[in-house]
Image 1 (cartoon, helix red, strand yellow):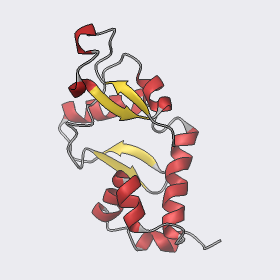
Image 2: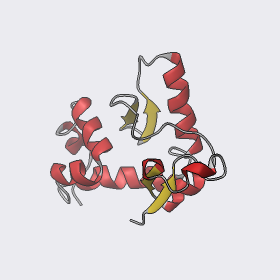
Image 3: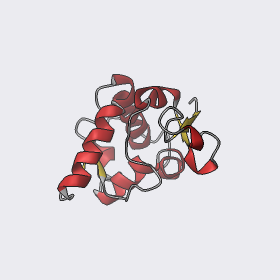
Image 4: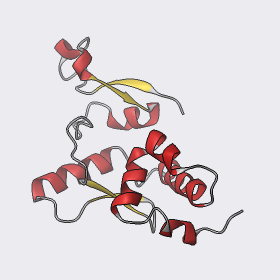
Length: 137
């Protein structure tokens, strides 16, 4: 998967941060282009449990019970980054879970390369149960 360097606070918004290490985030070119100059939640400040995975449709959603302000920021981030409207992103999550469920990859692989998916499988107690939803190919 391709990676790009994102200026979390856009150079256009604050040129003084253009060369500050603390302003760099590793991203995918696709996600970086969706973000543009808009404000989203900083991955360095997101708390575990703010975002949830719906394993029925592989959408990313705000977790239940969030404060209204946090839920609004989570929804804003999901919408700006097109996490549920870009079919390629949704299909990638589906394929990653399917590959785990059918034994193509391991849970350790998920933890290393897709930690959000691994954390959600664990949080929702689905790490083993998800295997029953996919037929081995």
